[in-house]
Length: 252
Ligand SMILES: Nc1ncnc2c1ncn2[C@@H]1O[C@H](COP(=O)(O)OP(=O)(O)OP(=O)(O)O)[C@@H](O)[C@H]1O
Ligand SMILES: [Mg+2]
Image (cartoon, rainbow, N blue to C red; front, top):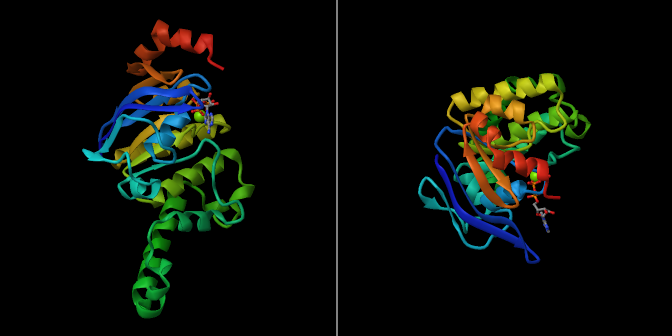
């Protein structure tokens, strides 16, 4: 699934925060998006996933225009995001959080519950199996019955990833997956992402931990004041004087 973003723009009260930004993630790709605080990275994710509306530009998933689709429709098309601040249901357990993330179950319709109980039961069984697989894959077994609100920052990031996986997405946008996560868990999280990527899931990852991100992705884009100012292999991009200046100068 190829994501192509061309010239998207967003202004808040006359202040342009995403400025004609373009980017591409190829099928099964692994791409990073970096930039100083306030550069517009999270806003870029919100535009791409349809949580906010921009001005102009074009976005396609496998050549299909997605610019006017709702976030749900974009998720159905195969692209989902996580949030910089995890949005798990704090009172639900880890297992319940993963259950709730699966889209369009037959049991969601009361009519099906009455008239097609067999189908509902079958789907629930299949869903339960997928949830247990995700829990095992993410090593969340020990906390599967713990309310998500009680987890550590790193565990919450794993649940966020699990919720994205439950949608069956082919492209997952991660907003700062390593923020507030201890170094050991960062390496584990990176390994899980690598394994998922090997299974064909593409990732676009915003991250301030440039070391960990550079070990994970072969391709980086740099955003500064809403504009993409550089892209390429991490070593080249991080050595680019323009990029160094953007980080040293700061924008906030
Ligand atoms: N809803 C909003 N209303 C007004 N301004 C906003 C809104 N959301 C974001 N901004 C502004 O847009 C700019 C970009 O914010 P954004 O959160 O996209 O940056 P970021 O690159 O994700 O930063 P960080 O690395 O700190 O998360 C900031 O100046 C921010 O204050
Ligand atoms: Mg952000």
